Image (cartoon, rainbow, N blue to C red; front, side, top):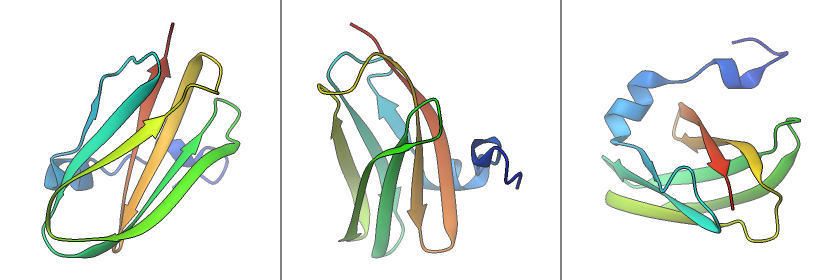
Amino acid sequence: YNELDPFTKIAENAIAHLNLNNLPNPFATSTTLSYELQQPEKVSLSIYNHLGQLIYQTEENQQQGTQHLNWKAETVPDGIYYYRLKFGDAIANGKMVKVR
């Protein structure tokens, strides 16, 4: 883990375990993170802009099975965004691109 750039630590095992997808990517107005939980978990989604500023966050308890989190990004400018999905002790990070 590099404290100067928290996005360099991508939990590939967590992504594979979750069967994590971010579609569409690139996107114009919204994108959906889909993943599968092996057990009920408290899930937190944080989205950051290219400067590392937190611009969106949600947290909810979710059941076992396939889950979907939709981010409606109509009000944010085009650009590169980073997400951090936390569940249990695992963290999965990724990148998304908003275009018009």
